[in-house]
Length: 196
Length: 110
Image (cartoon, rainbow over all chains, first blue to last red; front, side, top):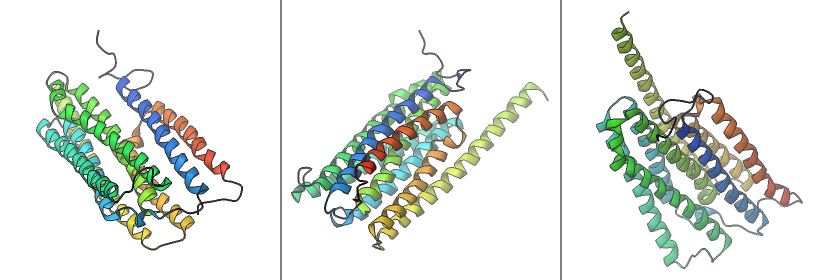
């Protein structure tokens, strides 16, 4: 039995099931990160002193990563726009760039974490580092998850384009919504952890 | 107009529409880059913590809104999506309000 409303929209909602599904998932993600942000506020306001992020963390590296992630959001939306224009070759280039930019983000994070760990700065060292590792670690997991999905749609999952291009375009749009959400979270994490 | 002409015209309109979207994406990308540099520049001014927090969050909200409105197409979404997000916003605000109420006895960010 086929999954209903993957291509045509439901009359009552005006949406495909996939679209409403991904937005409900993102709503739950807002609550997940919201709980952690609330914890951060509680711990910071309850502390007698709190270090400025830029005295401990590498701001130029994080600024570079911000630029990388924003660029990946643009390549992601351009990948979707390419499918809307029926240009599959261009889609592959943009989607490939999105995956590579995600990889660059994770590699930079690897060096950042490595530096802190070599300096003996662990999550157990203090509350600032505990918050830093928790929030950025969870965010990195999301980047990795998004990359896996995007890699699937770049590679084996792209077969769907030949048989059902509209469904494939919708699926890429949904994975794009997740990817943009990951970018959105980083836009708030960057000033909160690194600059304040 | 024949059906072939009508189909060709619709396809052409659709392509123009996407081209317009792409121009918006590029503009938003440039704006996000500029705002990122603004965020870093403001942090170097060493403002007092309450002002620094306010300004940094304000810029982050503008950047986040650009991503949500244009990359995530929230500017032209269906009502049900807005309803889901409105409900999420209420719970999110309640979640953030909890620590604020907890520290409302005179403490604030140090």
